[in-house]
Length: 309
Image 1: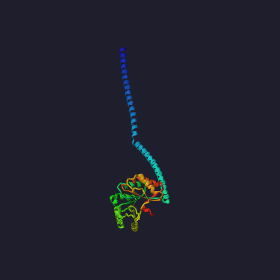
Image 2: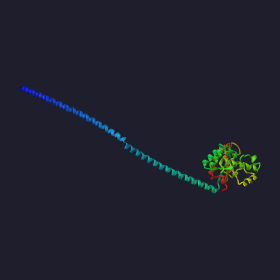
Image 3: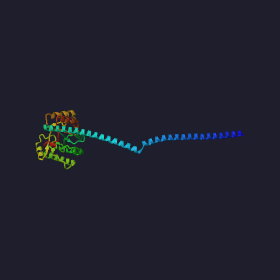
Image 4: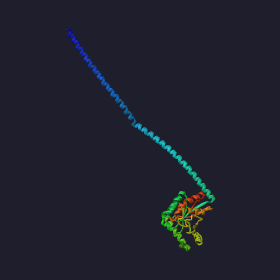
């Protein structure tokens, strides 16, 4: 009997022990699962942190702030650049004023000394040489006097307009430049002059007029023609210096320069004869050196419109 009871107690104890073991196993398993769950959550929490960091970089507010900072930096750089530009402009303006003052003083000195040069060009306008001469004169900011032939103006009206638009003086050099015809008598001469005046007005407009002429070949020995010209209220101009381009053909540039220096020596007021026909191409080449020589020797430049002033 006692043995049965003892066996029952042992069985009951075994059952209780088994149940406890099962409960413990369940608890331990649950804790394990829970730990795994928490671990997963911790890992996920770390990933969320990275995500928030990435979101922070692309945050519209932060992006707008960065754009504003960049804009401020750009504006600051532009202000600094503008200030530098103003500084450079001021320096350039000061230098230009100094150069202009020096040029004005040079002109005043030249006028006081009576050193004036009148560049004159006969027999144009031409298609090639005249535009090249105009470019050189523009480069040096010099005005010249062009004695044009009527029939050449008819051939190249656009070149004549160019001469006029650039502010140069235009004089009358006859229509035909035909010595045999124009110097046969005074009437022929004046008809030729008047015909050119009509051509000039046709090309440059009715408002254009000129009262200066140059006799083809010069006025030497033409007293009757001179009296008629003066009676008509015209001023005629010869020359007291030349580059010699009418003395032959295809002279070298240096020969023209040397001839000019020879004829200009010891003269304060120079009326320089040159030609702007296409046949006188070396005149174009010699012109810059002639101008430089005149500048270095203290001359100023003027047009024959102002000669008597």
